[in-house]
Length: 44
Image 1 (tube, rainbow, N blue to C red):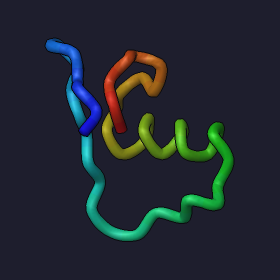
Image 2 (image 1 turned 90 degrees about the horizontal axis):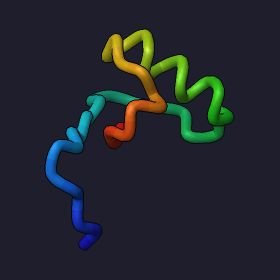
Image 3 (image 1 turned 180 degrees about the vertical axis):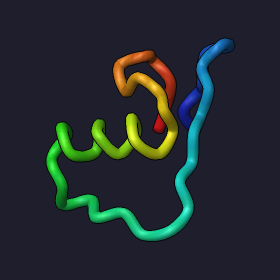
């Protein structure tokens, strides 16, 4: 198991996600679905 530092939030999305997308497309999903900064240090 990977330890998660205190203060780091873990965000989960339900449904299908095409993991063949590049990092930029996945980061855009984080911004659209969660209204969060994908570079915030949290786990998505």
